[in-house]
Image (cartoon, rainbow, N blue to C red; front, side, top):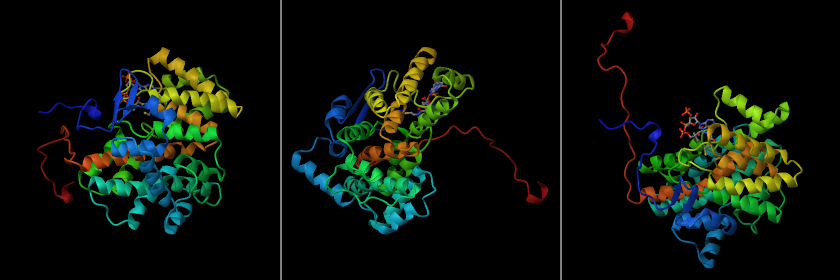
Length: 373
Ligand SMILES: CC(C)(COP(=O)(O)OP(=O)(O)OC[C@H]1O[C@@H](n2cnc3c(N)ncnc32)[C@H](O)[C@@H]1OP(=O)(O)O)[C@@H](O)C(=O)NCCC(=O)NCCS
């Protein structure tokens, strides 16, 4: 009998060249490059190109890739109407999931090949910021903003959210957030995408699966939950450490802490912590950072638990003036780069992903007629 591994913890199911999480050291690499080098230097497009092609682009290759993305950024009018009409009251991740799924209607069923994945992936990656920004504006009763062709991916997204071009600093912060979230080994949403791709289903289906998986509070939904926690303690005026103590006493998990792989501080959180401090100071609301940092110290001392990527992304996005309901979609707008890379890798030498369960139910029951039950 095969050994039971709950939650597939520690199980290795495939070989991959895309990224590696070094759990003990707190290090993350994409295709061999350390995120500490990529975060301050790379654009999001360079990062996506690297993840998809296994090497950094030349200037010419980058320009061509940026142009492909720019050309695909606008939504078909029916999708825009769907996002800003029937989906307007939906959870932003439900709206994103539904809109990405609906995009399949505008592309011939992409082939389940690496090339098919990258082709469909360019379309999906290009349009996800447009969908999210239009949804946020519709929720605020505002019209969508046309994509600005002079801006890169991070800048175009920020511009479509607010209608204004971001400052250089806000642009840098958004770029780094997108670069830092772009891939992370066989995390749950990536695994979802790969499971879907492994049946030789199409790339739109794989990304739709992944968005649904990212939405949950144990995964990408944690960044929104961090902000909900910070707002709750702010509203009550409670001391942050007392608030965290209370949550632990009630047996609750505190969002933004713990990880399946890291046993030290998540290296992405190191960068986002700096952004959080800087941006919260700038908006004159340093308490979002300070309360987070106080809970970080408490959690390490009390439970030996370290921050994950979601702890400081929350206050970073707050510093950028973004509504907390849209924090998880930002994660998706970035992680789609990794999902697509993994879908392509899965198609290349595909093996159906199909684990087994240990059956613990009855085995020899006797059928009873409905009239006798
Ligand atoms: C990320 C997470 C799902 C990893 O789960 P996992 O690998 O299955 O680990 P577990 O949930 O079994 O946690 C191991 C232990 O640490 C505790 N723990 C883990 N994360 C915790 C948290 N955020 N707050 C309080 N306790 C936590 C668990 O209660 C458990 O304690 P126990 O052994 O006494 O029961 C988990 O840490 C979590 O729920 N974190 C909060 C949500 C979050 O931030 N998610 C984003 C991840 S990037």
